[in-house]
Length: 232
Image (cartoon, rainbow, N blue to C red; front, side, top):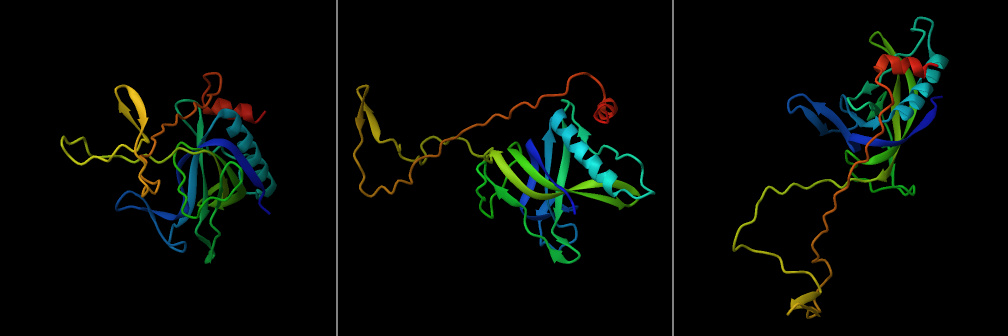
């Protein structure tokens, strides 16, 4: 049975978990599709620091060693991609169907473990925990360990940015000030109360969240040096 492991406090990259997607070569991007369509999958790439990558690779090596066949290489080749800032990226995937059987959608929960809505769309830059299972495989002459996506916990959510393509137009329509106070002679007075106000006329508050810098590993060694150290 595949072991389950939680990758904690990583940065979500291009998550596609609300439904199955497939990469469309014509438009050069992923598009929604049915779970049984060829290439259909749930997926999330993620960025992690050196310590998190080392711990994950250690678990993947153990799964590889426990399931390797005699013809496989003795050691697992590190599959992570090293970024310019010293962090590492990788990806967890769950196919829409295995052997014709549709898979259960990965669970998404908030920081308290409460399940999120079915149509919740996670965003790049959010901080998450990712539950995966290890599946050693031999395919196309390559032997490695895949991360099968099971669930995602959203620790910090970065709201999706809505881009406004318009600029201000003088003399045009404007919404009324939703404030319950009005300014008169530098004195704030309560504005008249509208008994028909349903409470939904308030303008949204725009908040900007900053992504926390991920600590890069110490030293200037290349990926090969780091991998050697992980094997110690």
